[in-house]
Image (cartoon, rainbow, N blue to C red):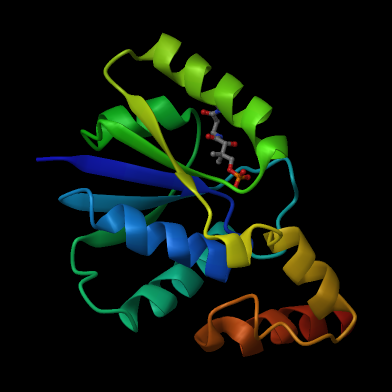
Length: 166
Ligand code: PNS
């Protein structure tokens, strides 16, 4: 059984992430979306919230029964080993992603040679897209419907509103 892990911060999930999820899910028997818990990037959403948002998005999509979503802590290769995953999935948007991704993929392979990283080139319409861009636009009340799945749009605005009202 081929088990893949698609790890990331997903803060929040974007249409670019969803594109990778749907394409990668066709290549494995089981795809685990791994949401990093203790992120130095200081996420907008808690890990539980990010997991819930992804689950909500996946629920609307066909042929996703073999996709699960969970948060993880610590080293990605350890999480992959615990889940019997042989493949790590990552997306490459542009050449600027490559250097960092290559280093991480090679380091992960060095730590555990049983695990390989498979890269998906992001579909061109999402090559500029990142969670940071989404947050920047939403923070200023801009329209994010071209960037994130429809079912989570309101949750992103609500999050910014709740932060402002504290
Ligand atoms: O969406 P991101 O923030 O680019 O995802 C980065 C992620 C979660 C894939 C990466 O930070 C990660 O794997 N973190 C877990 C710790 C780890 O295993 N680091 C790699 C060894 S150097």
